Amino acid sequence: MTGKRIAILGDIHSNLEALEAVLADCAAEGVTDYLCAGDIVGYNACPKECLEKIRSLGCPVVMGNHDHYVSSVQNLADFNPHAAAVIEWTRERLDEEEMEYLRSLPFTATVAGITLVHATMDKPMDFGYVFDHLQAEANFINQKTQLCFHGHTHCPMIYEKQIGAVYRIDAQDMNLTMGRKYFINVGSVGQPRDGDPRSAYVIYETATRKVRFRRIEYDIASAQARIREAGLPDRLADRLALGQ
Ligand code: ZN
Image (tube, rainbow, N blue to C red):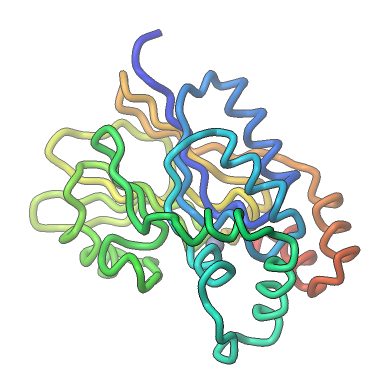
């Protein structure tokens, strides 16, 4: 087989069961390279383990808003109390070297002609949400490569720019067309919110220029039990089963 099979993983959010299931699927699919669209930590109960697994891939990783909150935001007064509690809890589990790793993540990366950003290339440090084609327009102004992968909303989606127009297309396997640009949301490994509780990630095959959206079952009950044992908010456990 020629060409690479690149797995793009995002919004892992400390969900070890989900990450392990996704990495097993990557191995079965013959993935050769990895990219991480950020938010390794936050929400779930295994920040340290997920950080270790992602770092062991030796792949490019960009900064997610939760990676940023945990490693760099001192004053949590503007956060809702549940969110602040999880950020504090996560900090207590990480050592200074791990905090420094998170702190040092870049907000964008370009690898082999592919751009990677957590939220949007329009002010990547502001972590704006892209839910429609109008919001995607601002990204495309700043997207220099044909292909850019992102996350942040936890909902897999395709935004396609043709001459004069941007279209939002439901996540589906597709081949890239020359002359068009693509801004592709890879969905969330650790906390999907599109109503499907299975883990989401994307494989991009360079030889065929094909994007494939993967959905993977994982042991949700075990991830939920860890959240409850850790004393993290119940809602974080409940939502995993709902995919919300
Ligand atoms: Zn996230």
